Image (tube, rainbow over all chains, first blue to last red):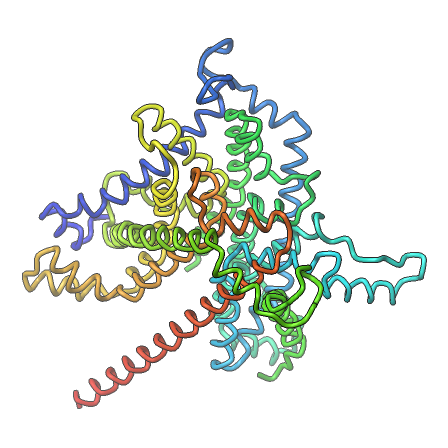
Length: 304
Length: 279
């Protein structure tokens, strides 16, 4: 690609150096450099000094022990498994609830659509922490919501199974529920964007050719919305897998997720190399879905 | 539509109930007279009174607003520069790295961003003696860094849509680069700059995880204060705080929506007038 005329003009007057340089240097100093330090620290040795790590020692320069512990110690493997399972289940439920909502948004009148879209986005502008907190109020033992669930449970099951309250707080169920609640807009918006672009005449053509509504959905709508599904899925899965706030407030402390492990290794255990190794492992885990995503994107671009 | 979307409407009703019942429940219980946050004990506004007379809450709110104002402004300046560069400068040394750097903070887990910045601040304090104490400055620096990339995304998307011909015309007519920038490019993307600033402001005001790492003694932002209170359980004054925040945001978003639709309507009207006078 050649330089644009805009750029050549700016180069000529020496303005482009400033325009490129300021944000570039900022990100290099405050993002890339700190990140590279963490990557380097993941092969350092934990020492009782301040700062608590050093290079060298018995293994000259590189110490692979933190990484081998990530791969062999059950604590880390269980935490990774909990994170991936919670994030994946939350993603599936977001999809199951978000897809019909996004499809519904494309089917209502323009006035309703604008109002409903604003209602989807509005919770996103309110505090994330307070949205988690709202569910703490609902899930607690004495809340009206828990009472409602308990009563309907006791009504439906035999007497011997009756419960005083539904144990929701401090479970993985609570984590998934709150994740679905907080991340659902991230699923709905890309799905809506991809569904809105679809050509309605394709649906009509399929129906004219005798497809039943569910066949139209399965054969026409769904395959065309896969980019939206992938984008929404990524936007839910990636932050959910690294989530720290939700599991620490409503999760089961005996089954920590990986974010909590990183925080504890870093803070309480003061083992910075171990925290860094777990962090790098988490990033590698996230790079895989990201690569799948960019693969899909590149494919979609080529099709265009 | 020929197809009856009963199923879709049912799911949408359920979905919006799912979105708003927890928030409504929180608002209702903020007027609860009982200290037990989950048992209704009559109507009362005492939690609002105790909230505004609580110095810790008021100080935390002002600290958060200060950080959000400063960080959103810097993030908007840097993010706009990056967005314009990526959209208009097709070729420069290190472009690949740069375009990676503006995406990476978006997908980086907050815990990792928080830890890497904290380690960096600690090591810097060791090596160059700065920052001596963590607090306002370190939180602001962290917020600028991870919210500027959101601004970049918005600006880049807007720049790609906007018409380069106007900029080229200005160049042909002999404008200097800064004139092109300030007379054409920036006014054209000004709505995107505004929404970028608002997004950066909200992100900063809402951040818990990164702030919890890079903060220092005596610098408690509002989300950090809420987090430390909420960890101990549900309390009625947090319900009151949540209600105030939801109402503020709700009114703000509603007003912004109204203003935007009005300017949009005016612009369409102006365009129609312009076409008519052409005839």
